[in-house]
Image (cartoon, rainbow, N blue to C red; front, side):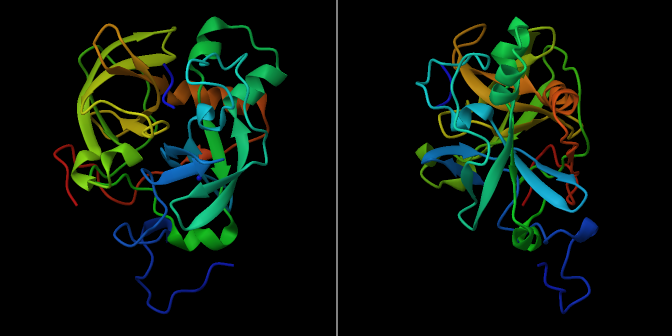
Length: 262
């Protein structure tokens, strides 16, 4: 079942973090914030950039118009590109990429891509750039783009589902990869606590702090209440080979902390 984002010159020289981003402790737009697409709440994964344009990622199915059982991106319907998405409660962005819509426009038939390619980009308005930090709350990072995972590899995530009742202590999640399928397109992970509706789209890090995936589904096997995580490297490669978008992952300004932090 599918789980049903003009820059002012700062007065103080150190008012911005490395790379010109807002300080992590003060940023209101960063990985883990809530996104709302036509009222459906999801969680942003990572920050991306192409030139001066800044994007935040979410799952493609966050803009889906069908029910929660419609998970095939080659047949499931979605709101169109240009759809407005509320990000972090502080700005509204525009959906400029959706893997479902892209696969349908290219008549994709590869079953692994259709099942597991679940990624979208929200372009942020220029005025929002001063509010953005690319670091993942609690964990820090990402330290770069990851790749394949071995069975038993540690994973880290941060969910913002409204079902958690704004209890921030429940947002950080750590767990393990219990297996891959789809020729590397999907990682099946088990975390404490597992991802729930509203955590959709949240990002996953590996033990080195590299971004490895996007939360997509709840699965019943091989572990009850495990989650299906789309492989981010595969999803970005598909975007670049089928569109003119060249957005790349932005590394966090905060160091990765596998034991957590503030």
